[in-house]
Image (cartoon, rainbow, N blue to C red; front, side, top):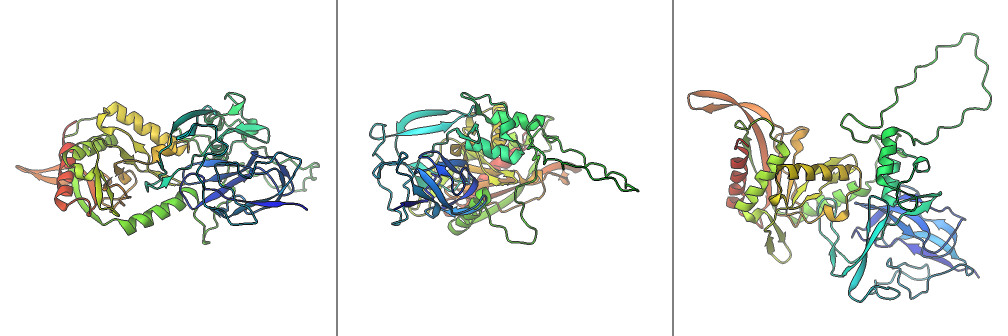
Length: 471
């Protein structure tokens, strides 16, 4: 009698209730071996390769590419093959697999089958070179974080490994980037150890245009030309691999573009952003103050974003109450001696807020370098999860697009966010007449449970004073 096991989607370590299927590594009817690649799943921050918990024939797949699967829901049915290796029932896989015969059991403490010493966890860090670094670390409960800053608790550790699919070795995040840039991984020359395709390999192939998917084969026999042949249509110009700003461009259309006028299910980053914004709306008591910074004294060569961060740091030092975290459940706050700024980065996938660490000790050159590194990592979807959490205050420079003032959203546990609007020139009364000054609109939203109106006003005044300096 055959034994069919159902594998339920495990907690992938993000603290999120669901994940999106990126690509199946198996098909129904195929035989999969224990720990072989089963499916790539996308969460709000990363693409994770999920290994098979059993050996046997794939009986049923509970979803297609692009489908959202709830954590704990059925993912695949596998008919066990007794002739192939199977994991012992008591052996811990780290994913807490479910079975068809019973509902998933509560998670048990880790330990069975683990080689690491008691009280430590083996942390696996994926590198840009396609390999991995393993370190034994103390095992406190880690903050799971989210793309836009909600802080949740999790003890899960996710191991991203370079796996071979179709004869090509690559990390899950590398496969996702290749799919986004329209790069055929089988046409990319690997440079990583052991023949692993790296992030840089995919970016270089996209820039050169040497690894586009193969075109459909031409018809075997050409049709005879009509007597009065119409002029041949002019081929559309080929899109370049990189934009004018040097960023990789999509070289192929999305696999399943949304139909206009039809409901589209939110996935990945946008799905998580919707949850976090709703939670922030429910938990924060926001109040917004607005004013204009006068930049008339600025000398040529000032970097606007760097000046904003410097002013933010000085305001945090002047009024620490807004460089803080607030726990609404326990009515407690934490004032931070350092300043880690969450920089809002807009992408076509949704909003990311990476943390610019130790902004209070960086000079102008260091701030610019850090900003560029974070933005490139976000756009390439290579930013580590730990860099998307833990910031102490947020900054949004929406004025690069449009808009003067805003009511930016404070995401707990942060207390405040500063938003800069579009610069403008305006007549300003001065002694003896009027002058044309360049002004920067500023909006400061703060959680009124954690800070007073006076503290917020003094914070905004410190911002304005620093931005008014010549350099």
